[in-house]
Image 1 (cartoon, rainbow, N blue to C red):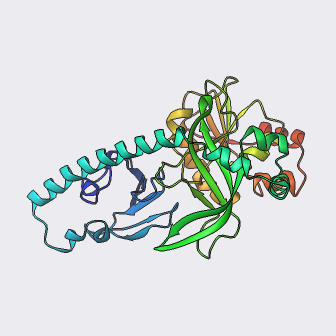
Image 2: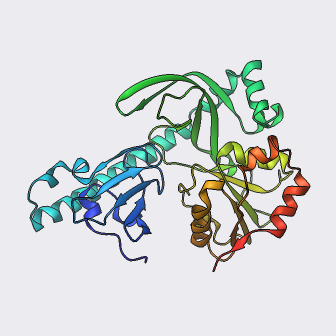
Image 3: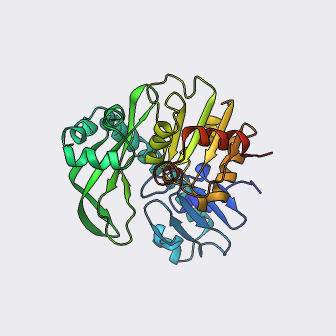
Length: 318
């Protein structure tokens, strides 16, 4: 079911080579609005250009003709060729801008500002989420009183807690803003605008992804933190993906790790299996009855109990 992505994706300003088949009716790839990896789903089961799309990251949705208004007119073969070439040039410009923004972000002190704004009230909020002060400092967690963002043409200002995201060797790649009171229809988490979606690493101080040869993948940054602390796995690399279908190129990064254990939310069983299959035979997935942080914090699962679950459960793929 793999196949080659349809060339018409290029006529929509999309990076054809970055799309992979999601199922028989659709393809997934980076979102042209938020940049989220594999968050953009486009349905190709109807005759082109009558395709529709949706991003499960920023809620960008609509029809193909909204990505390229000229598709509402009759399109010649030559015009199609020109559009594809133009799309390649535009993509190169976007990638260059993204690299520049990432370089600027890496040199900024945005996470330091968030940490400096942390008072007793904010630290208590993080403690209530299962993260003690010492770990708040380790992960450089923070707070901003006035996060500004746009959603569906409307602009908002909200309080937010900040979760800096670092690659190996503490290389800054993004920051998630956990909104305190998100508007209706807006998700709790907002990444730094203009930067690609990034996973959360519990051990960004490592020089390699997993010196011990095992990686756990969970859904969300806070779940990764709680799993590391409550599961007594602080020496293991635990990766929090932004969403069940937002993998941030992890399959390629994890294919050579000895053991990969995937534990997504209970409503993401299919996504967990798909991720395991994408990684390879070294990956297995575990279905838990509740979200992993809820099991630790609300149901008081112990580290020993969790270890036993990981050892005796998990489905291998292949």
